[in-house]
Each structure stands twice: as structure tokens, then as C-alpha cells.
Amino acid sequence: MTLLTVWNENDTSTPSLETTDAAEIREQLAGLGARFDRWEVKDLPANPTQDEVLDLYRAEIDGVLEQEGYTLVDVVQLKQQEGDDWPAKVTEARSKFLNEHRHDDDEDRFFAYGSGVFYLRADGKVFAVFCEAGDLISVPANTTHWFDMGTDPEYVSVRFFHDDDGWVGHFTGSEVSKEFATYDQLAERRAQLV
Image (cartoon, one colour):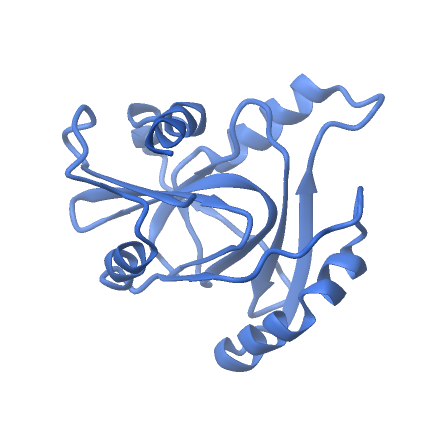
């Protein structure tokens, strides 16, 4: 169940909105120029390759490519593997994406498996979108945001780009991301709403 939590950027204690209604989530994000959609979740093989994920969602991916003009698509997955130095890997990945940043390009992500939270800061508010498998979110270019995968991440996501440089973040230096509920805290809230 996707969860949208909205706070005033100067009041982290009480959300001004909390909803799991997909239509309301879509409407709220559209007001920021962001897109939100849901795709049917398909069964992935254990430890899927990039090609297996892309082939499984080929029709949906081709639709986004045609509509948005993306030229590069890849798959990123994060889950504990035997022999991994998992704590160090998680710390490194989280520290990069938890810092507020923006991109010159839109940031489109589809969650084929697992979950993560995108936080968009705009219009004096912070919009936290707890995405789950089946969710497609698009963060518009130059929108300040950050991403939290949680302390024990496990996800597979498809990323879309307009050029071959892929993911290039311009960090703001702000520590605003430390002031809002984390992935783990939002996961607890979300579980209470079920």
C-alpha cells in the first residue's frame, strides 16, 4: 500500500496530510509536476538479471520511453548477498541518497520489487511517497528531493534517463532530510493503517 505523508517543511511533528488513496496521491504529486502510476506487479525470478526485469515489463517500459522520450533504462537492485559486507554497503548507499539533491533530468523510478521512500521538497512542504512494488514515480527535473531505502533495504527498481550520463545529483548541502520521518518510521506508520 503506497503511502503519501505531507508536512509543512517547518513542522516535522504533525503531517498536514496522510493518505493511501492512489487518486489523491496522484493529484497531490501532479500539483508538483510529478507523475505517479501503478503497474501490475509481475513475479520476478530469484536474483533477476537486468534483462529479465526489462523483458518482464517491456510493454510498460516501452510506453514510458515513447511518452517521455527517455533513451537509457537500467535496473538497480539492492539486497543482502552471501559474503556481502552488508552494513557497510547499506551505509554507503543510504548516505548518498539521503542527502537532499536535485537533477537536471527527471528522475523516474518503477519499483518491480520491494519499497523505498522519495521525499520531494516543494512549495514549503515535504511530500514523502512510500513506494512499493508496482509504483512508478517521476520526480521533475530540478525538484529538491532525497530517497531513503531503509536500514535493511531490499528492492529492484527500473530507472529511466534522457542521456547516457545516468544518475547525476547536485547536492544542496541542506540537512533537512535528517528532520523528517525515516523509511523505517514510515513503514511502521504504514503498517498501522493496514
